[in-house]
Amino acid sequence: MKDLIQHKRAHFDYEILETFEAGIVLSGSETKSVRLGRCKLEGGHVVVRGGEAYLVGVSIAPYQTANTAKDYEPETPRKLLLSKKEIALILAQSEKRGLTVVPLTMYNNRRYIKVKIGIARGKKNYDKRDKIQERETDRTILRTLKNQKNT
Image 1 (cartoon, rainbow, N blue to C red):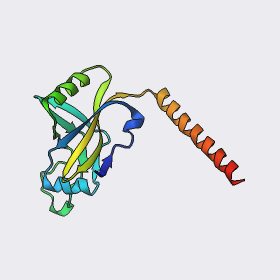
Image 2 (image 1 turned 60 degrees about the horizontal axis):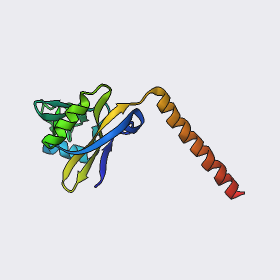
Image 3 (image 1 turned 60 degrees about the vertical axis):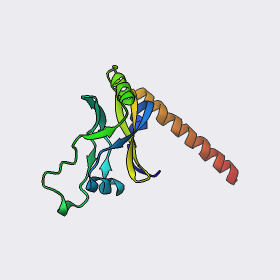
Image 4 (image 1 turned 135 degrees about the horizontal axis):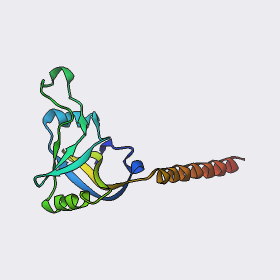
């Protein structure tokens, strides 16, 4: 399994409570474009309508710009392939206050494109500052240990 696209800020902006693996319905040219890494997961989320889950707000660039159909829309909602139990659980969790469902990564599973989605709660600014401060202290500790080792 090779990660093709990652939502780089997802773990920084959200606290991920639970993750799911879902298939995604794509056309052939969209699949080729995703394999080339021409997709943007930032700003995407999952919506449940009529008992089906859709990935909304994810942009997949056309594979060949000169050869693309004129009615191609890069940000169309794309259907996710999940079981009924998973859809019911996602619907119940997303209706709770403060929770949302965001895409985390897109990857290959043999010949299929899969999406890892997560039920997430948005972090507050002070949580983000604490995380940044932890990283900085870890870096300074490693730096001092490295300097002591070299002398």
